[in-house]
Image 1 (tube, rainbow, N blue to C red):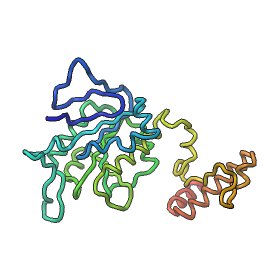
Image 2: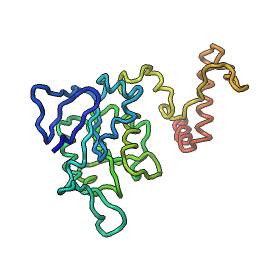
Image 3: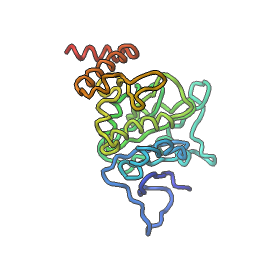
Image 4: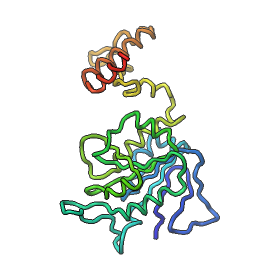
Length: 265
């Protein structure tokens, strides 16, 4: 049987169902944040996570990524991972016994704060605050569902948290998993070149981000707001705050209500 775990970035060692060459061990990086992904499509990773800043950080060992091939834990000759829903209905549901074996494998050697997350449209919406919380954990195991979802007993048994990208349905959890990991990894120490960029971006202070401009000074008859070229940092900060408040109030009244209430306290 092929090894069910595949590592990306700097090499690592993991328990598998296949013997490894003991003369060439692969070592995990100690005390480095790790994402473990349980998926039917391990080749989908790292995907976009292997590019740009997250990809460079992965190669530099600032975070680690492992995929666990769910199919390897399937039942029978064809490695089945799903079955018809109890009580009838359309589609298929991912089996509890298959998922349980995969999760137990993925959680081997985990220590400290290591949540298990299931990407699900019925979960609570992913926010910047959730990403910040995950970035402070020791690692995270992400379960990517398919079909009509997973057996509810798995969620109950492992205390899995469900997280959603929004009020829509995708064919699987791989894209949401990559989005959540991207949002988290960029908050890890030394991943972003300029840590100050995190402070002023959308949601970090309860507001949407202010408009951004750069060269050329004039484009298609439109000029950069004069205050941004004034050299007066106080006026620039005031203008940016006002713009953030204006945009948030217009586009996200839910965020604005929370922000406005916090200002009164």
